[in-house]
Structures are given as structure tokens and as C-alpha cells.
Image (cartoon, helix red, strand yellow):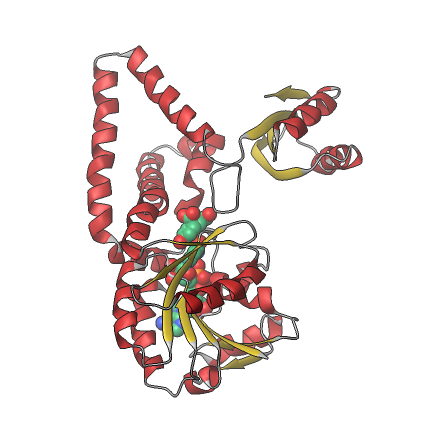
Length: 362
Ligand SMILES: NC(=O)c1ccc[n+]([C@@H]2O[C@H](COP(=O)([O-])OP(=O)(O)OC[C@H]3O[C@@H](n4cnc5c(N)ncnc54)[C@H](O)[C@@H]3O)[C@@H](O)[C@H]2O)c1
Ligand SMILES: O=C(O)C(=O)C[C@]1(C(=O)O)C=C[C@@H](O)C=C1
């Protein structure tokens, strides 16, 4: 029997718990310092054993997952290493930044206990155990950042355990992780929040801003609704990387200012062309990655049951839909549905089929 202790059973911790739930070879224990939270976990059936006692949670545990906000990780490791831990126990975390926790933890773990940093590249703007899902990590990358000197056999053992999540496990050096994830996750969160707040400012004197905000604004700002405390910790922890990235961002924006000031249409076209080309070369959609390349758009009337009709048509033709999104939906105005497919053939077949009844844009 493999015992897994999870500290912080929220979106990520809860999703991990659900991955191992009901599998007879695993026992999962959920920990929260708050008895009401433990009660909620048990009631929702996310874990069958819950406790407010750290010592009880880690007693005999083979793996310990720290799924609390980044700012608390080092403190948790400090407390854990004071407790009697099973020989061979692997402590890992899921924090969105990796350098500080990897470097400090590797130094303090006792002999026979290992710390291996981890970060699943999947998530959502939602938070809390209510948003947890056993499918969250499927096909996503899951980064491990073992410190120098960590035996590869221990990394392999954790990799084996994580296979249950159906994620693709990769090893990256912790500082390189923070540089890259700073650019593709942390910077976009800052930009989304700044953009929403810019428009929020205009909206105070004219509510039409909010009302007219459609697909483009929604697409680029979904992550602005993320949990503030989680993101406070991530941004503060990775601030050196982010300050450099924001300087580069200012240069990108400055370039657009210059193109607009000089009315340089060719320059604008070139910027869009370069961006589109890079984006289209990204690998096929995975969770935690940019949207599918094989999208089609369907104009649909805004009435009840329409989405069911579309999905039924596709299902009957055995066309596999990987994502569906309403871009804009208002009464009496045609809605636009974005349907995403894993390959061009499915997108083409869907387009031909739906084109018999609806206006389809590719
Ligand atoms: N949200 C994402 O998309 C995402 C993706 C990958 C990794 N992460 C990382 O996962 C970790 C958890 O984030 P989440 O999105 O699951 O957030 P969450 O808010 O859903 O869960 C956080 C958990 O930590 C607990 N917690 C918060 N403050 C605490 C405290 N003071 N003492 C004890 N427990 C406390 C909460 O009760 C909750 O169970 C963070 O380190 C985050 O960086 C998040
Ligand atoms: O998809 C989202 O909503 C996310 O915010 C997920 C996301 C990301 O930026 O891609 C956010 C934080 C994580 O540490 C990993 C993944």
C-alpha cells in the first residue's frame, strides 16, 4: 500500500487526490489546519482520510505533496523535516515557481528523505476543492526540478507515481523553469490583469465598454479572474525574472507605439504575421498549452438546445470534438461558436457537415 499525504487540498491538491482516489493500491490523506475544511473534503469524498494534524498526515507516508500557495512552501518543508518521516519518503510540491523551494528544501531534508520540486502545467482561473478534477492533468506537461545530487532513481520513482495523472513528466532545471514559466504563464497573468483594469477604468464613465466586450477581450483576459493570493505569491517569488520580462514587454509595446505613430501598416502586418506563424507552429493542443490549431467558427441562433443539436450532429458522424466555446451570445443576434478539433481532417469534416445547416467560418 502506497500512502500519499496531500497538504492544501484545493484545485491542484484536490485534483491530485482525485487521480488516486478509489485505487486500492493507494491511501490518500488530506491535510488542512482548518477542521471545517477537513470536514468539507471528507463530505465531498475527495479523500477518505482527512486530518488537521501534520504528524498524523505524514506518519508512514511514501509521498508528501505540498499544494499550498507558493509563499508557504518553504515553511511547510521546515515543519515537515522536524517530524518523523518514513525512510525513502519523497516530499514534492506543485508550486508555480521552482528555484527557491528546490534550492532551500534540498539543503534541509534529512538523510533518507528526498525533496523533488514539481509543477503541473495545467490549471484554471478557478480555485478551491470545488474546482478539482481527476482529468486536470491529462496530457499536460508536469515539470520536475530535482536539485543537483538528487538520485535519479528517486526522480524515477516519483515519475512512476505521477503516471497515474496521465500527465507527461519532464525534467527541467529549476531556474530555467522559472525563466520560461515566467514568460509563458506569469507575464500573461500580469498582462491580463493590467488590461482588464485599464478597461475597468474607462468603464467607470461609460458602461458600454463592459457591454461590448466580446470574444477577443474574453479570450485574452480569462486568467485575470485567477485567485489573487495564489498569484501574489507567485509574482513576488519570481519577481526578478518578471521585472526583466516586463522591461522586454515595454519594448514590444513601444514598438507598436512607433508603428502607429508612423502609420507603418507593413510593420503592423509583419508583427501579426510573425506572431501567427510562431503560434501555428506550437504543438498540437495539450492541456496547459495554447488553444488548438484546428478551429472552426459556426454562426448559430441564440436559442435553447442549439449546442446540443450541434454536438449531436458531430457525435452521430463520429467526429471527435476537443473543445467548444461560445464566443458571443446575445438575444436575437447570431452567436458564434468556436469548435476545436485535434486534426485538420476532423475540422474539415465538421465544417462540411455543419455547413449544410449553418454558416461556418474556417
Ligand atoms: N491554479 C493553477 O492554475 C495552478 C497550476 C499549477 C500549480 N499551481 C500551484 O498550486 C498551488 C495551489 O494552488 P491552487 O490553484 O490549487 O489554489 P487553491 O486556492 O485552490 O488551493 C490552495 C490550498 O491551500 C490551502 N491554503 C491556503 N492558505 C493556507 C494556509 N494559510 N494554511 C494552510 N493551507 C492553506 C487552501 O485551503 C487550499 O486547500 C500553488 O502553489 C500554485 O502556485 C496552481
Ligand atoms: O489555464 C489556466 O487558467 C492557468 O492559469 C494555468 C497555468 C498557466 O498559466 O498556464 C497557471 C498557473 C500554473 O502554474 C500553470 C498553469
